[in-house]
Amino acid sequence: MTAETIAYNILKDILPDKVFPIHAAQATSYPFIVYGRISTIVNNTLCGDTGYSRARIQVDIKSDTYKEVIALAVQVRGAFSSNESATMDNRNDLSDPENNTYWITMDFSIFEKGI
Image (cartoon, rainbow, N blue to C red):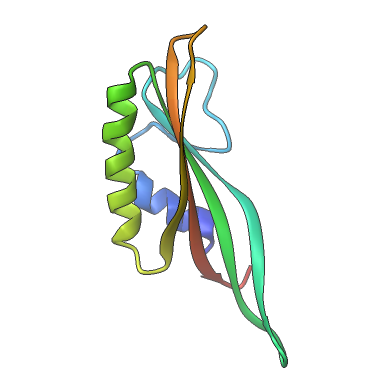
């Protein structure tokens, strides 16, 4: 199973019908979640490629209230922590004052086979 499939399966119940790969449709209302692979590290040994890798998946939670993105970030972290192949690496809280929007970017490492 790919890291993207694992991420989607973890996220889909948090905001049903508002979880998107790479980018959301332009008319999507807040809140929503976007996810995508930002890097892959292949697990090699002295004998060669093990067939496993660690994918870094970025999850962006976007809303028009800071309180809402924080509440969703707590749910996202809890959902990822319940998956044995995923660990959280980083979190950044961001805003766009001109558009009155807030988002939290979270990076997770997901171990996968075959990619």
